[in-house]
Length: 179
Image 1 (cartoon, rainbow, N blue to C red):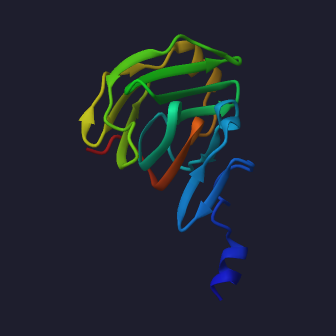
Image 2: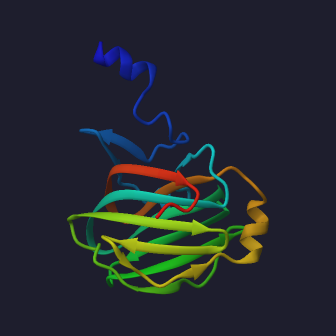
Image 3: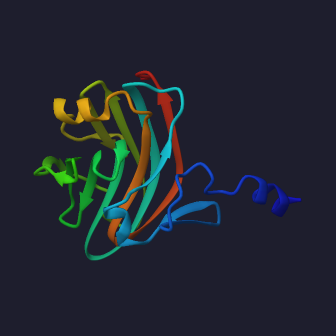
C-alpha cells in the first residue's frame, strides 16, 4: 500500500523535472554540479511578492563548495539566490539573462559544517532578509531589473550545489510576512 501511494504521488513530484534530486530516507538530496546552472526548483502556489521560505539543510562538502537557496526563480537565466561559500561566508547573487552579478557579502554564516541548520529567507517585495539558526545576516535588495524580468511569474523556490552534497530535511513557504 505504501509503494502504491508513493507511485501515485512520488516524493519528487512537487519539484520540476530534474535529474539532480533524489529522495533517500525521507530527505531530499542534491549531489550534482549541474544544479549550479539549472537549480532544482518547485512552484509555490498562492504566494506573491511577500513570503517566508524556511528550510532545514545539511551540507556535506569538500575543500571548496557552494550551496544555494533559490528564493526567486523564473528560469535558469533569471533567478536570485543566497549561497554559502567554503570561506564560511554567505552571499546574495542575481542571475539576469544568464549573466550573474557580483555577489553581495551578507556576512559570516554558521552553516558550512556537516550539521543540520535552519534557514529563513524572508522576501518582502524587493527586500530579502536571511537568518540561519535564528541569526540574521545582512539585508539585501533585489534589483529592479530582476523584479521586472520576473514580471509576476509564479513563485518558485529551490536549491543548488557546486562541489557539495546537500540534504534538505523539510521546506515550508508561507505567504505574507509572518513573524
